[in-house]
Length: 208
Image 1 (cartoon, rainbow, N blue to C red):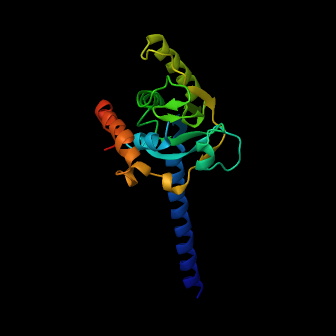
Image 2: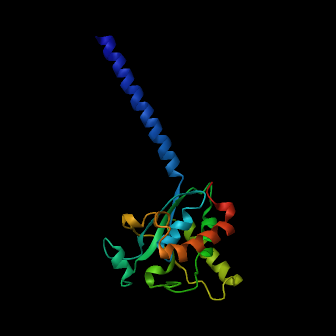
Image 3: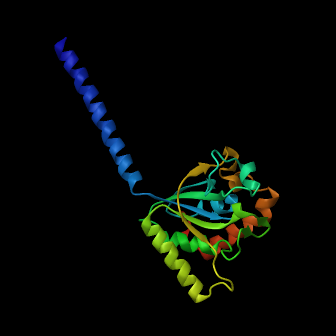
C-alpha cells in the first residue's frame, strides 16, 4: 500500500513540475513582448493594417485618452469625449522594432489633419501615439521631429504623443471587423485600398 502511495505521489509531483516549467516558458515568452497604443482614424482601418504585420502578436481595437468610465462606441462617436479610437498593439521587438511600427503608423494615415481622417471627423479620429515606455516616447518624439524637418508632408505632423493611461476594449463586433465584413461599404471603399497599398509598400513586413 505504501509503495502504491509513493508511486502516486511521484506522479503528482512530476505532473506539477512539468506544468510549472511549461508555465514558466510561457511567461518568459510573453515577457519579451511589448505594447503600444495607436490612434490613426477609424480603428477598423488601423487594426486591419497591423493584423498584417510580421512580429505583431495581436492588435485589439478600443478606446483611450478619455476620462469617462466604461466608454461605449456610441459615446465615443459623439465626439464629446476625449477618447480616441485606438488599436492596442502587442508586438515582439526582436521581430519588428518600435521604429518600424512608427514608420508603418505614420505612412498608413494622414498625420497632418487635426481630428480628422478623410470623411471621419472628430477628436475620436485624431492621430495619436499613447506610449507605454520612456523609450517609446523618445523614439516617437524624435521621429516626429525628423519627419517634420524633412518636410515629408506639406503640412506639419500634428500627431499627439501622450502617456498611456487606460485602454477599454471595444465591443466584440469590432474585433477583426475588416476580415469579418469585407463586403461592407466602408471596408470596400476605405479600408481595402489602404490594405492593398500597405501590402505593396511594406511587402517586407508582411506576416508569413
